[in-house]
Length: 200
Length: 266
Image: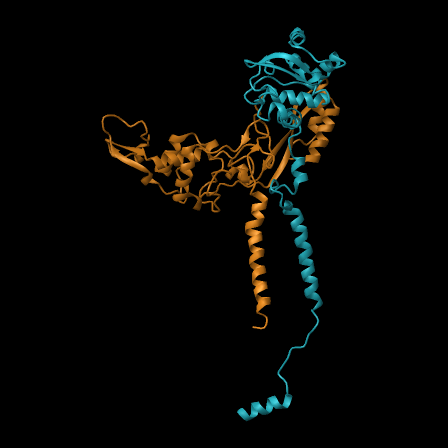
């Protein structure tokens, strides 16, 4: 036996080797097809790893499209957005105001008043001088911060502050804001007496 | 081992990839989750569970409730419903239009088209967003579960097997603590065909002393203890009931929008 083996190896002279051969084309095609299908599945179902996107929403754009667009929910959501961008810096995102900057809106008698004519005048015209808010005395000036907002935006903001942080006053409509804005004309900063002279 | 370094690199790459996918990825995705605003109100969600309920989570975990109950509602789809708010100046035209239009089960684009048509006719409409799917049809929740539902729970108990019903919104549909406690002591006294084992060791059967304990369960006859005895929940049972009643995963959020049935007017 040992002789035979020896003779066999001496005959060929080398150890067996595997030659390099070309990758079969069908494997390449199958792999690329799977990769392509996987890519499509990923695009449809991953939401691109956005933490807010869950199934059945395909991506952030679809999720955004299904947010409420009408009714009280939409008004509150839009109002919150504008409030936090424009008013929240001084009045606080929690509506509690900031000492030395702006009075609180939560529980403020100016905000929760039955009519909102006086309230709407404050952001549209601005206010300065002494004023009492929720039992505290303030003596500062506020520019007409709301004059740059559209009627609908300002109405949403006022609806938001009148319905938030425990406030339970009614909705404000864009048409009313339009009328009030037209009545003011050129904004002129109001004093407490001028504000009190307005109908409620 | 002439390829030792290559083998080491390959093994290292495998470990790093799986660590990246299962630890780093989720951390980057959800690690900074925080309280989020509720859509139809000015409140935030979730609030931390009250103390008893937080302890109840540990009782829930210790008794292996998550082996048979899930806390994750699944949602298959989302649809829009167009609801007439007011008919406007010519109600006849609007009502004719309404009868020709499909108003339920619409996609967002179809709903917008319907809203445009009705608004053009002078009517005023609202679009409601509705989550759909078998779990929602069963009344287990109003939307799919999101990471925020578990924000203050550690360890989270999402569960994966449903021998019992999903509990993500059980606090909203349960009649109250008394029924939950009775269910824990004698499941079949509340749900006739319940497969749930009774958790009697969370309760104490004791002789009635001077007067009834105010906590004693009010059991039907066939489940009641012998005359002169009463069933009183131990603290664990009360904590577990408080935890179950604190499960309210059914508020609309940005990541899970829907229109609640009755929107509270401000």
